[in-house]
Image (cartoon, rainbow, N blue to C red; front, side):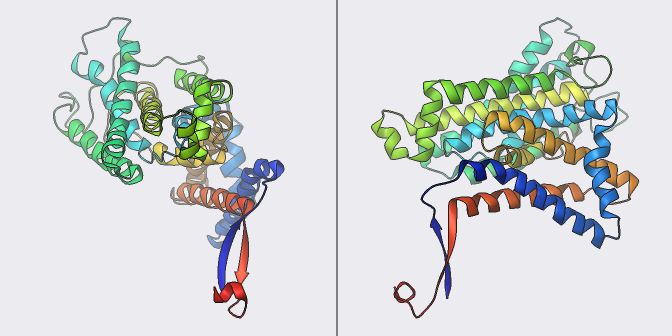
Amino acid sequence: MRIELERRGGVSPLFSILSPIIALALTVVVGAIMFAMLGKNPASALYSFFIEPLLETWSLHELAIKAAPLILIGAGLTICYRSNNWNIGAEGQFIIGAIAGSILPVLFPEWTSPVVLPLMLLMGMAGGALYAGIPALLKTRFNTNEILTSLMLVYIAQLFLDWLVRGPWRDPGGFNFPVTRDFGANAILPEVISSGRANYGFVFAIVAAVALWFLMRYTLKGFEIAVLGQSERAGRFAGFSARRMIWFSMLLSGALAGLAGISEVSGAIGKLQPVISPGYGFTAIIVAFLGRLNPLGVIISGLVLGLTYLGGEAVQVSLGISDKVVRVFQGLLLFFVLSCDTLIHYKIRLIMPGTAEGRG
């Protein structure tokens, strides 16, 4: 006996909408079982994880800070994945964007012009785009798998950041700690409102997601992305270039990841340090799929995944559970999203050895 997957003739729009909701519900159920196995009350643990972070104004600001990079990166990744270009290295592009955007406040701290912050944001976007251009170049020039190259470049970016803050960029007045000098007031992303820490990085994320939704829905480029993603051959007949699409999608997603990086550093952190991300670039992959590869859906899924970071911190403090529980929840969510999507698009067939199909 063997098992095969057979593609369904039609996909119900209702089930496509319900898929992420079902996946989230299954994640909660399995999470409750996990908490019970750890000897914790599942109801109390889930309350601390999903509800408690929403009850205070300051925690809502923290949610916006956590969700902003996830939405920015996830929105860019939707363009890549819908065009069938698999950028897995947004974490590296996030880091390089943060480094590129930090050149001015680290190397030229005495420059206090009002144009410093806009230049930092532009340099961050350029850094992320150029770093994403490396796997794009390798794919178009040598037909290299962009999944492997973009992923490997993440670790190069992490090591490069670590070398910078421990070496040439280390703060001479920082008591030998591996950090850069604190950014000046002119290099700090301002807060949206004065009641908390949420900064304009969240505004950038919402604007980018809405702009990409408009591009996908109402422009020829959006139609080109959809056609090439479903059939490169059909796209060629329509006059679209898969090679140009590789460059467009990778550079766009890299630029948004770079913007997320410099927004995080100039907003929430205020300097460079060895670790500037808890894995936003990888978590944004889950955000993109949970949002149905729709930029507007990414806003909601980004908030949900941002909540898992806050919830993980809450249960770590209140219940004494390892912070790794966040990774478990995020992994479960991705697993169930992909599983639900597979069962929506395919049906399982059991092929018995005695049948004609089994002999074939």
